[in-house]
Image 1 (tube, each protein chain N blue to C red):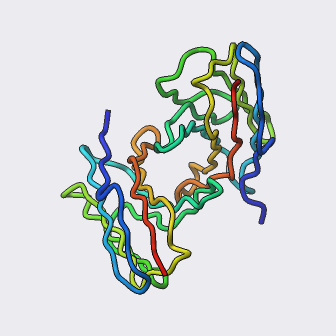
Image 2 (tube, rainbow over the protein chains, first blue to last red):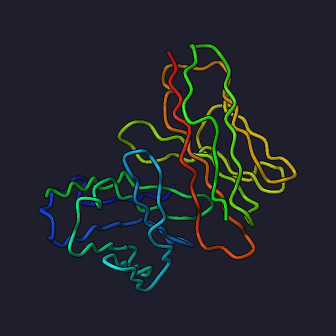
Length: 106
Length: 113
């Protein structure tokens, strides 16, 4: 089956710093989503982005489907950005990467 | 607009027992998928229901079964619980008619003792 790899696995930032999270996938996909999982386990949909670039406030995402990767950019990070970020790709079902655990320190 | 609702939020069961988890999809969605998330890992796909039938299934044993009702809500049943079934169980809904991704519920945290 399709492999989804996220990097880095862990990231520690100072408040105000910028970061880039990467998601590589091993085969063609129909769709891709980025999620933020808060400390209570809720998966919050950040972007539905099968291709191209989208922006939402301090967050933006780019997917290059032909090269099988997606990037999530977080600018001017805040402590509330802490949590685990997952990318998930959709073929016949949705497959998740292992996530990037982000810690933003005040 | 109600999102995906799951019940119960927490559950403690004894090894060997059976459990039923429930999910109501987001308004306008007709497809329900279930995921198991063990501590420190990404969610793993269990199965997906559409038009009251199991459409896709992940690599989970037959102890895991489900059902979808005419109102699109769904149940996940797990029989003969094992300690390793302890996890967060997540429900996601979507629609084939105009796909804009999956919406997840807050999950049910199952502890098997």
